[in-house]
Structures are given as structure tokens and as C-alpha cells.
Length: 415
Image (tube, rainbow, N blue to C red; front, side, top):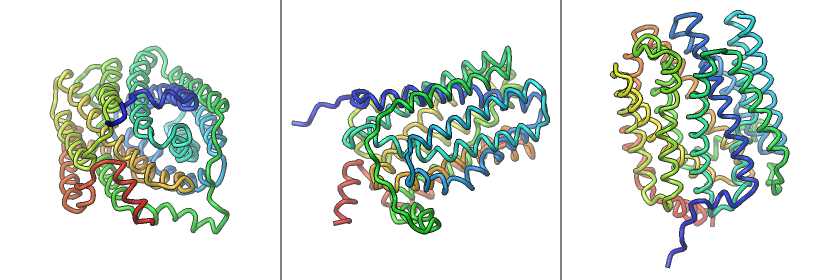
């Protein structure tokens, strides 16, 4: 007789609960800040390319610094590294508030966004790699599902509050982000974590590329993150939401807040459903269908001229994206040795994190050259083509069933 599934198993652990509370606060603040940045740039310039440049300013530091960040996460104390990163981000948020009050030049906004991306990038692999230290391995899938639920609650709350805040004061949204980051750092300082295995001293370059070699040798991980890379790169509709709110749907900053929150509502409901269900049994096929659904929903949003249909399409993108996140994060963490989790998280960050920002740049560039509708719809079509190509090229992903079987198969290969 199978053991009864406990949907709240992760929250039986104090460290996990405190970590998630702090992460939610920081993401709520960050969501409001992201909305404020897009709104301020578009109101000041009226150019979609200005939004794309914001994505590029944040993507370049992520690409350059993520390998180093992965090495640091495996070599030094992850909690302390994460605290320093978060406090650096809080300082950048406060600087953005001051610059907004002074109506400083646009190049300074982009410079601060690049600095903000730099300090947050240095702590991002540590944030991912610390999660397995918070709960036992057997409930890790449950922890990932709840983590994505918490992320989506924050992603709903952040833009919704941000839309209300920026209606009165854009700088206040930046200050709220700084305050929430400070609270996260405080909660992290109170955690008592078990010792983590650290990578040995060695030639730094070989240590940096070890994560790349590991991912290249893990066909399932490589296929999953490659699929998400191109899907996110092409499906960057969210960066154009200020354009849609102003010029296409004409719903203003409050409508922008609703559109920004709609994907998170869909992702939240999906994450709650996944957390209450037993582990997936056909995870590979589910991942492919979810990314295809994301492409279809993106096309629907791009063609819509009705706010309610647009909100529904964005809701669907969140539903599909959350399934992809749960499958990918669980797979990566369970198949990666603890001493390499930081560097593998860095590889994943380059694939996924930077593709979000580069996708925003690509969307802004196409929207500037053609139109916002062409940018969004072509991205959705490209996403569907990527799913088809991945399904053909990766039979391992098509046959991938459950996470427990994947772990057992890896252990068998390693003897």
C-alpha cells in the first residue's frame, strides 16, 4: 500500500518556511519595481525599444557573471553570499528611487539596471542551490511546487501593488523593493543550515566550466533547459505589456498591473494543483505540451484587442510556464550532486535567466521595426517550432516519466 501524499510536507521544516517568506517579500518588491521601470521608461520615451534596452542592460551582466556566480556558490557559504547579493540589490533600488525623483538621464537608469543585475546575478545560483539544504530529498518535488506557488503569489501581488503605487509615485515602488529585500536578508541571517559539500580548490577556469560539462553529459537536463531557453527567448510578450496597455488596449497603469499579474494567477493555481497531486508520471510529455501551450497562448494574446481575452491568454501563459518550471527545476536539482549545484544552477541561469532579458530585447527590437502584434505573434509561432524540433531531437525527453525513475537510472549508471 502506497504512502499517503502529504501536500504540505515542505512546510513542516522551519528553514524552508522562513526562506519562502523572505523570498516572497523580495519578489513582491521586485515585481513592483519591474513594473515601475517599464512604465517610467515608456512614459518618458514612447519607444518600445526603450523597454528592450532595459532587458539588454540586465541580460549582459547575467551572461558575463553567472559562471563566476556558480563557482562562488559552490566554493563559499551560500547563505552569506546570498545575503550580500540581496543587500546590494536593495542599494540599487534605493539609487533608482533617487534617480527617478531627480528625473536623471536614461543612460543612468540603464547603468543602475546593469549594476542591479550584476549584484543579483552573483547571488542567484546560491539562492537556487540552497533549496535542497532546506528539506529532505524525498519531499523535494513538493518543495519546488510550493516554491513556484510562492513565486506566483508574489508575482500576482507585486505588479498589482506596483500598479497602485506608481499611480501615485514611481519612486515609492523602488523604495518598497529596497525595503522588502532588506527583510529577506534579515530572515536569511536567522536560518540555521546544515553544512553543504563544497568544491575543492583548483584551477578556477576548470571549476567554472565543470557545470557546462556536467549539463552537456546529462541529456535530460540539456533538453529541458534548451527547450525553455528558446521558448522564453521567443515568447517575451511580457516586456511589451506597457505598450499594449498604452497603445493597443488603452487600459492605463491599472490595466497594466492586471496584465502583469494575470500570468502569475495562472501559474499560482497550477502550482497549487501540482503541490496537492502525487509526483508526475509522464513528466517529459507534460513538459513538451506545456511549452506548446505557452506558444499558443502567446499568439492569442498578440492578436487580442479585448482586455478580457488578453487577460485570459496571459493567464494561460502562466499555467503552462509553471508546469515547465516545476519539471525543469526538480529535474536539475535531483540529478545534480550538491558540490556542483551552484555551477549547474549558473548554467541554467544563463540559459533561462538571460533569455528572459534577451527575449525582452528581441521583442522590443521587433516591435520597433514592425509592430507589437508582429513581435508577440511571431514569438509564439517560433515557440511552437522549437517544441516540434525538441520533440524530434530528444527521444530521452519524450520517454522521460517520473523523477524517481530518473534518479534511479542515474545512480545505476554511476555504479
